[in-house]
Length: 414
Image 1: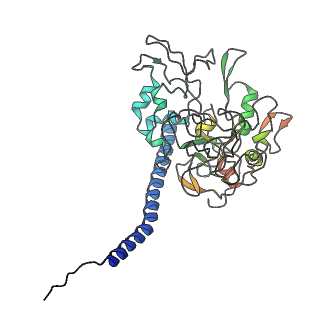
Image 2: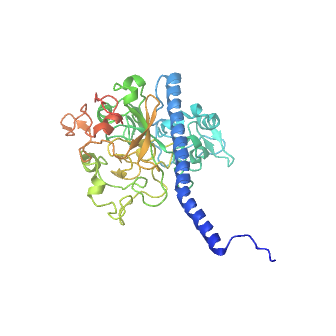
């Protein structure tokens, strides 16, 4: 009597394979979602460490880390030599020219003491090039600290890495709900006098005080006591995503949209209408996350978050004017002021760090008032914005969270 063989028939095998395929298809999105949830949690934890470092810095020095600090040779602007080293015997030629971001100052409080020691002391690298204390300008790629990624300054959800940018970051200082003077701050090099002026030009101080209403004021020290709206009601920093070379409206900035790039720029361009870039048809209508063909955007080497050590708006600042993940729209080139929203690679919003150290996730749908309202600015006693200095933010809850002393009432959950 012949024995009957046990086993799968071809049909049964195909059915099993089909079932496995369906299960994989069902489980894969869940696995990917779990991985993103873990990355998002790590991103939030890194941001909390930044907040803790800001508080520890304030405890040590009785002020917040400055957004716009560093060394200078005092008698020259030295743009031409800002990124040039000196010979081994010195002296160095390049200085950081008050261009360093708050992220440089908190390095010792982020377990980056070795990097801080390298930056804070004069050094000679292995090529025999000498660098001053606080380093050269933050765009000097030959200076290794500036070219290095600091892991705690990155969000794991952001895949951007490597050249042509220098060292990337995903955590930007909040300078408030306006744009005016955010690229300059309260100190500047006076070419006519051949020297730096430190917060002693009354006209510039008045202009900055009127418009730079955030926790961080470029090139000016700030203290927690200055935050009259309360630490828990005021944003200290926000998440930003870095560029992937794909003309994303969140990372590659549209340029030359006007607003205070010359004497005639007051109240024009992005200062008059934050949605200038969209209203000018610069965004691709078929792919609203990307710029339209023909739109002039910043080069791949000068994009959002592309220099963690650079204090200028595009690199380590953000303002609470447009909602998270909106377009980056600059008045001039990559070094100028403009609309610089928070952004992220997470779905539907971005993290923000409050001044009390809390980290929360803000959705793209947060109340941001009138997105085409004129920003707050002041030129002189006879020329100022239709939203004058001291007024409540025209950008709803989002704008109110970004301003530190405008006396808005936060009466809703966010």
